[in-house]
Length: 295
Image (tube, rainbow, N blue to C red; front, top):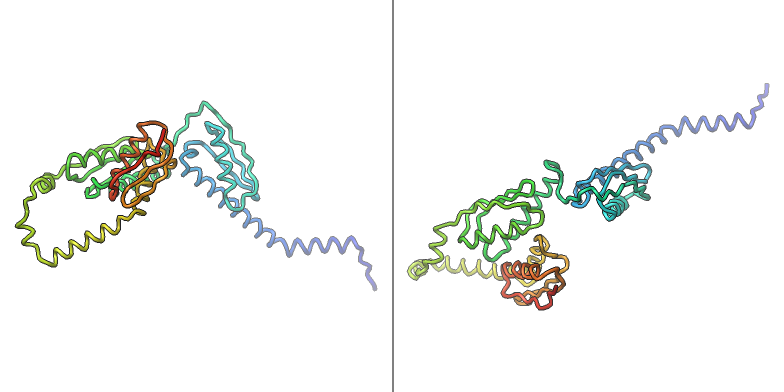
């Protein structure tokens, strides 16, 4: 007996076979795509959380097959545009459906929500910035200082060589981006003050061994070699960028044999004076030329 198989049967059979064989593969592809979507959502959300201009807003991102849908509220249109650009910057995002609402009544804030992960990142960044500024300063580099930051509130503890060094440390901390307040609990070291004002130590120098003298010279030479013009330029630039009330990104810094030149435009005479003071305080700076720094 011969069987006649219709074309429709063959087509249906082929489709059924494809579904049976290809089903697991299609399911695997779907799972992979879902994982990719979740990864992209997390990356967008994390970037929003860490961004000082977006973190205080209730932004949400959902991703489906390379398209990110953004929702939430921001105070200005520029924040909405920034959110879109961040999403587009994530690998694999091809399109953004930006449904974020601009509400001018919503207050803008650069601080992270209290107690959150972003706040911890902020506080850690402030601590590093303050510590760096103190270490780079020619007047406070010897400070034995502990720096603690909580919700932008900085506490300084330890010792300072003089009342002037203590005061400068407090001002450098207060002038750091993100700092809300400063508690300056540094204690002035009486021994250091006496040492700095009472050096009639010719006999002490005579008692030093030759090895100790040579070692001191080696350390001094190494220190002087480390403070190069490039080092000075980097530290001055970083100090300006870390500091509030100074548009550090608008100021060009160059150094030639310890002489620092500042160039650019600032908003006021007070900002100009602060930029000069901050540059002058950096270790290795002999003088500051700021004729090209205008306002």
